[in-house]
Image 1 (cartoon, rainbow, N blue to C red):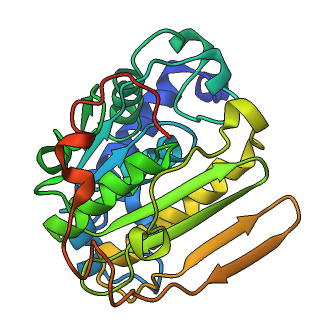
Image 2 (cartoon, one colour):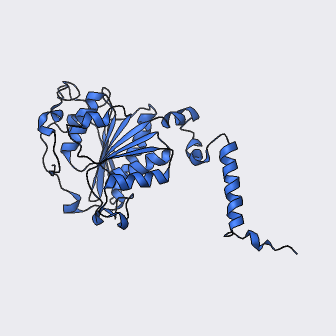
Image 3 (cartoon, one colour):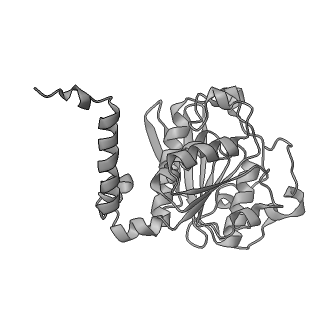
Amino acid sequence: MKDWTILHAGSALTRKIINFYSMLCIVFCMNDPKYSRLKKLEIITDEEYELIRTKKVVIIGVGGTGSLAADLFARTGVAGLRLVDRDYVSITNIHRQVLFAEEDVGEAKVEVARRRLESVNPDTKVEGVQETFDASNAERLLSSFDLVIDGTDNITTRLIINDACVKLGIPWIHSAAIETYGQVKAVIPGVTSCLRCYYPGEPVAQPTCAEVGVLSSVPNIISAYSWTVGMRILLGREVSGDMYHIDPWSMEFENLPISRRKDCECCVKHEFIYLSDKYRNLGINPLV
Protein backbone atom coordinates (compact mmCIF):
# COMPACT_ATOMS: atom_id res chain seq x y z
CA MET A 1 0.00 0.00 0.00
CA LYS A 2 1.38 3.40 -1.01
CA ASP A 3 2.19 5.98 1.63
CA TRP A 4 0.45 9.18 0.46
CA THR A 5 1.57 11.12 3.52
CA ILE A 6 4.60 12.16 1.49
CA LEU A 7 2.26 14.59 -0.33
CA HIS A 8 0.80 16.21 2.76
CA ALA A 9 0.28 19.98 2.42
CA GLY A 10 3.40 20.96 4.28
CA SER A 11 5.90 18.62 2.61
CA ALA A 12 8.80 19.94 0.57
CA LEU A 13 7.78 17.77 -2.40
CA THR A 14 4.26 19.22 -2.41
CA ARG A 15 5.61 22.76 -2.35
CA LYS A 16 7.94 21.95 -5.25
CA ILE A 17 5.05 20.53 -7.30
CA ILE A 18 2.87 23.59 -6.58
CA ASN A 19 5.71 25.96 -7.49
CA PHE A 20 6.39 23.99 -10.70
CA TYR A 21 2.80 24.23 -11.89
CA SER A 22 2.62 27.90 -10.90
CA MET A 23 5.65 28.59 -13.05
CA LEU A 24 4.12 26.64 -15.94
CA CYS A 25 1.00 28.81 -15.64
CA ILE A 26 3.05 32.00 -15.78
CA VAL A 27 5.10 30.81 -18.76
CA PHE A 28 2.33 29.30 -20.87
CA CYS A 29 -0.78 31.29 -19.96
CA MET A 30 -1.40 34.29 -22.18
CA ASN A 31 -2.66 36.34 -19.24
CA ASP A 32 -0.29 37.00 -16.34
CA PRO A 33 -2.16 35.51 -13.34
CA LYS A 34 -0.84 38.28 -11.10
CA TYR A 35 -3.23 40.75 -12.72
CA SER A 36 -5.93 38.32 -13.88
CA ARG A 37 -8.62 39.59 -11.50
CA LEU A 38 -8.17 43.14 -12.78
CA LYS A 39 -8.19 42.00 -16.39
CA LYS A 40 -11.38 40.01 -15.86
CA LEU A 41 -13.25 43.27 -15.23
CA GLU A 42 -15.56 44.21 -18.08
CA ILE A 43 -14.89 47.91 -17.44
CA ILE A 44 -11.22 47.58 -18.49
CA THR A 45 -10.14 46.11 -21.82
CA ASP A 46 -6.87 44.22 -22.29
CA GLU A 47 -5.55 47.15 -24.32
CA GLU A 48 -6.47 49.61 -21.57
CA TYR A 49 -4.79 47.48 -18.93
CA GLU A 50 -1.61 47.35 -20.98
CA LEU A 51 -1.82 51.17 -21.13
CA ILE A 52 -1.94 51.28 -17.31
CA ARG A 53 1.28 49.22 -17.27
CA THR A 54 3.09 52.08 -19.04
CA LYS A 55 2.03 54.85 -16.62
CA LYS A 56 4.09 56.55 -13.93
CA VAL A 57 2.66 58.07 -10.74
CA VAL A 58 4.10 60.48 -8.15
CA ILE A 59 2.91 60.24 -4.53
CA ILE A 60 3.64 63.41 -2.54
CA GLY A 61 3.54 62.42 1.13
CA VAL A 62 3.70 58.77 2.19
CA GLY A 63 1.41 59.03 5.19
CA GLY A 64 -2.15 57.91 5.86
CA THR A 65 -3.56 58.51 2.40
CA GLY A 66 -0.31 58.32 0.44
CA SER A 67 0.83 54.94 1.73
CA LEU A 68 -2.26 53.01 0.68
CA ALA A 69 -2.46 54.85 -2.65
CA ALA A 70 1.14 53.81 -3.33
CA ASP A 71 0.34 50.23 -2.35
CA LEU A 72 -2.67 50.07 -4.68
CA PHE A 73 -0.80 51.53 -7.66
CA ALA A 74 2.07 49.08 -7.09
CA ARG A 75 -0.34 46.14 -6.97
CA THR A 76 -1.96 47.42 -10.15
CA GLY A 77 1.38 47.14 -11.92
CA VAL A 78 2.03 50.70 -13.06
CA ALA A 79 5.44 51.18 -14.66
CA GLY A 80 6.82 53.49 -12.00
CA LEU A 81 6.19 55.14 -8.66
CA ARG A 82 8.05 58.12 -7.24
CA LEU A 83 7.53 58.60 -3.49
CA VAL A 84 8.35 62.01 -2.03
CA ASP A 85 8.43 62.52 1.74
CA ARG A 86 10.91 64.13 4.13
CA ASP A 87 9.70 62.36 7.28
CA TYR A 88 10.68 59.31 9.31
CA VAL A 89 8.37 56.56 10.55
CA SER A 90 6.87 57.36 13.95
CA ILE A 91 5.06 55.03 16.33
CA THR A 92 2.02 57.31 15.95
CA ASN A 93 1.85 56.43 12.24
CA ILE A 94 1.27 52.72 12.69
CA HIS A 95 -2.47 52.69 13.37
CA ARG A 96 -3.33 54.02 9.91
CA GLN A 97 -0.29 54.01 7.58
CA VAL A 98 -0.37 50.56 6.04
CA LEU A 99 3.19 50.37 4.67
CA PHE A 100 4.84 50.63 8.10
CA ALA A 101 5.32 48.42 11.17
CA GLU A 102 6.82 49.04 14.61
CA GLU A 103 10.16 47.66 13.46
CA ASP A 104 10.37 50.55 10.95
CA VAL A 105 10.17 53.34 13.53
CA GLY A 106 12.99 55.83 13.01
CA GLU A 107 13.65 54.90 9.37
CA ALA A 108 12.97 57.19 6.42
CA LYS A 109 9.43 56.65 5.20
CA VAL A 110 10.38 56.62 1.53
CA GLU A 111 13.03 53.95 2.09
CA VAL A 112 10.73 51.64 4.07
CA ALA A 113 7.94 52.20 1.54
CA ARG A 114 10.25 51.50 -1.39
CA ARG A 115 11.39 48.17 0.08
CA ARG A 116 7.84 47.14 0.94
CA LEU A 117 6.42 48.02 -2.46
CA GLU A 118 9.23 46.34 -4.37
CA SER A 119 8.50 43.15 -2.42
CA VAL A 120 4.79 43.52 -3.17
CA ASN A 121 5.36 43.86 -6.91
CA PRO A 122 8.82 43.80 -8.52
CA ASP A 123 7.18 44.78 -11.84
CA THR A 124 6.80 48.36 -10.62
CA LYS A 125 9.94 50.48 -10.38
CA VAL A 126 9.81 52.41 -7.11
CA GLU A 127 11.94 55.49 -6.36
CA GLY A 128 12.11 57.16 -2.97
CA VAL A 129 12.94 60.86 -2.68
CA GLN A 130 13.55 62.11 0.86
CA GLU A 131 13.12 65.82 0.27
CA THR A 132 10.79 68.59 1.34
CA PHE A 133 8.45 69.15 -1.59
CA ASP A 134 8.34 72.88 -2.35
CA ALA A 135 8.63 75.40 -5.18
CA SER A 136 12.36 74.72 -5.57
CA ASN A 137 11.90 71.11 -6.69
CA ALA A 138 8.21 70.78 -7.63
CA GLU A 139 8.60 70.95 -11.41
CA ARG A 140 11.65 68.69 -11.40
CA LEU A 141 9.94 66.02 -9.29
CA LEU A 142 6.68 66.03 -11.27
CA SER A 143 7.89 66.39 -14.86
CA SER A 144 7.49 63.33 -17.11
CA PHE A 145 4.94 61.68 -14.82
CA ASP A 146 1.35 60.90 -15.79
CA LEU A 147 -0.44 61.49 -12.48
CA VAL A 148 0.23 63.09 -9.09
CA ILE A 149 -1.41 61.95 -5.85
CA ASP A 150 -1.62 64.33 -2.89
CA GLY A 151 -0.80 62.51 0.35
CA THR A 152 0.20 65.67 2.21
CA ASP A 153 -1.13 67.22 5.40
CA ASN A 154 -1.16 70.97 4.74
CA ILE A 155 -2.74 73.45 2.34
CA THR A 156 0.54 75.16 1.39
CA THR A 157 2.03 72.03 -0.15
CA ARG A 158 -1.24 71.28 -1.91
CA LEU A 159 -1.27 74.73 -3.51
CA ILE A 160 2.33 74.19 -4.66
CA ILE A 161 1.26 70.86 -6.20
CA ASN A 162 -1.69 72.61 -7.84
CA ASP A 163 0.41 75.37 -9.42
CA ALA A 164 3.08 72.94 -10.63
CA CYS A 165 0.60 70.47 -12.10
CA VAL A 166 -1.44 73.16 -13.87
CA LYS A 167 1.74 74.70 -15.27
CA LEU A 168 3.03 71.31 -16.47
CA GLY A 169 -0.37 70.03 -17.62
CA ILE A 170 -0.29 66.98 -15.32
CA PRO A 171 -3.52 65.67 -13.70
CA TRP A 172 -3.47 65.40 -9.92
CA ILE A 173 -5.78 64.26 -7.14
CA HIS A 174 -6.19 66.14 -3.89
CA SER A 175 -6.99 63.96 -0.89
CA ALA A 176 -7.26 64.67 2.82
CA ALA A 177 -8.34 62.71 5.88
CA ILE A 178 -8.90 63.79 9.48
CA GLU A 179 -11.13 62.81 12.41
CA THR A 180 -13.92 60.68 10.84
CA TYR A 181 -14.07 62.25 7.38
CA GLY A 182 -12.06 63.10 4.31
CA GLN A 183 -12.28 64.62 0.86
CA VAL A 184 -11.13 63.96 -2.69
CA LYS A 185 -10.93 66.23 -5.73
CA ALA A 186 -9.48 65.59 -9.18
CA VAL A 187 -7.73 68.39 -11.06
CA ILE A 188 -7.25 67.94 -14.80
CA PRO A 189 -5.57 71.06 -16.23
CA GLY A 190 -7.65 72.74 -18.92
CA VAL A 191 -10.66 70.54 -18.18
CA THR A 192 -11.75 70.77 -14.53
CA SER A 193 -11.54 73.43 -11.86
CA CYS A 194 -8.26 73.56 -9.95
CA LEU A 195 -7.68 73.75 -6.20
CA ARG A 196 -7.36 77.54 -6.29
CA CYS A 197 -10.81 77.76 -7.87
CA TYR A 198 -12.00 76.28 -4.59
CA TYR A 199 -9.43 77.87 -2.26
CA PRO A 200 -8.45 81.30 -3.60
CA GLY A 201 -7.20 82.77 -0.32
CA GLU A 202 -3.90 82.64 1.54
CA PRO A 203 -3.01 79.40 3.39
CA VAL A 204 -4.28 79.29 6.97
CA ALA A 205 -3.60 76.69 9.62
CA GLN A 206 -5.91 73.68 9.58
CA PRO A 207 -6.50 71.12 12.35
CA THR A 208 -4.03 68.24 12.30
CA CYS A 209 -4.35 64.54 13.13
CA ALA A 210 -2.02 65.16 16.08
CA GLU A 211 -4.54 67.66 17.46
CA VAL A 212 -7.93 66.05 16.71
CA GLY A 213 -7.10 62.46 15.73
CA VAL A 214 -8.15 60.33 12.77
CA LEU A 215 -10.19 57.13 12.52
CA SER A 216 -7.98 54.34 11.19
CA SER A 217 -10.28 53.51 8.29
CA VAL A 218 -10.67 57.06 6.97
CA PRO A 219 -7.28 57.55 5.22
CA ASN A 220 -7.65 54.13 3.62
CA ILE A 221 -11.16 54.80 2.33
CA ILE A 222 -10.09 58.18 0.98
CA SER A 223 -6.96 56.82 -0.70
CA ALA A 224 -8.89 53.91 -2.22
CA TYR A 225 -11.30 56.43 -3.71
CA SER A 226 -8.36 58.53 -4.94
CA TRP A 227 -6.81 55.46 -6.57
CA THR A 228 -10.09 54.70 -8.35
CA VAL A 229 -10.35 58.26 -9.67
CA GLY A 230 -6.69 58.03 -10.67
CA MET A 231 -7.35 54.86 -12.66
CA ARG A 232 -10.12 56.65 -14.55
CA ILE A 233 -7.77 59.52 -15.35
CA LEU A 234 -5.00 57.20 -16.56
CA LEU A 235 -7.50 55.44 -18.82
CA GLY A 236 -8.77 58.73 -20.24
CA ARG A 237 -12.25 58.34 -18.75
CA GLU A 238 -14.39 61.33 -17.84
CA VAL A 239 -13.75 62.62 -14.33
CA SER A 240 -15.56 65.32 -12.39
CA GLY A 241 -13.73 68.23 -10.77
CA ASP A 242 -16.20 68.25 -7.86
CA MET A 243 -15.06 67.93 -4.26
CA TYR A 244 -16.24 64.65 -2.72
CA HIS A 245 -16.74 64.56 1.04
CA ILE A 246 -16.85 61.14 2.69
CA ASP A 247 -17.64 60.42 6.36
CA PRO A 248 -17.69 56.64 6.89
CA TRP A 249 -18.50 56.96 10.59
CA SER A 250 -21.81 58.73 9.92
CA MET A 251 -22.24 56.94 6.57
CA GLU A 252 -22.42 60.24 4.67
CA PHE A 253 -21.25 60.88 1.10
CA GLU A 254 -21.64 64.28 -0.52
CA ASN A 255 -20.26 66.02 -3.58
CA LEU A 256 -19.72 69.75 -3.79
CA PRO A 257 -19.77 71.04 -7.39
CA ILE A 258 -16.76 73.25 -8.14
CA SER A 259 -16.72 75.09 -11.46
CA ARG A 260 -13.70 76.81 -12.96
CA ARG A 261 -13.57 80.42 -11.80
CA LYS A 262 -13.32 82.77 -14.77
CA ASP A 263 -10.80 84.86 -12.83
CA CYS A 264 -8.80 82.00 -11.27
CA GLU A 265 -5.23 83.17 -10.79
CA CYS A 266 -3.88 79.68 -11.48
CA CYS A 267 -5.81 77.76 -14.15
CA VAL A 268 -7.09 80.84 -16.05
CA LYS A 269 -4.52 83.62 -15.56
CA HIS A 270 -1.56 81.25 -15.11
CA GLU A 271 -0.16 83.25 -12.21
CA PHE A 272 1.75 80.55 -10.36
CA ILE A 273 2.48 82.38 -7.12
CA TYR A 274 3.10 79.14 -5.21
CA LEU A 275 6.10 78.48 -7.45
CA SER A 276 7.67 81.81 -6.49
CA ASP A 277 10.74 82.31 -4.28
CA LYS A 278 8.52 82.69 -1.22
CA TYR A 279 7.75 78.97 -1.36
CA ARG A 280 11.25 77.74 -2.23
CA ASN A 281 13.65 75.96 0.13
CA LEU A 282 11.13 75.54 2.92
CA GLY A 283 13.32 72.95 4.65
CA ILE A 284 11.88 71.30 7.74
CA ASN A 285 9.75 74.27 8.78
CA PRO A 286 6.19 73.21 9.68
CA LEU A 287 3.69 74.26 7.00
CA VAL A 288 0.11 75.43 7.37
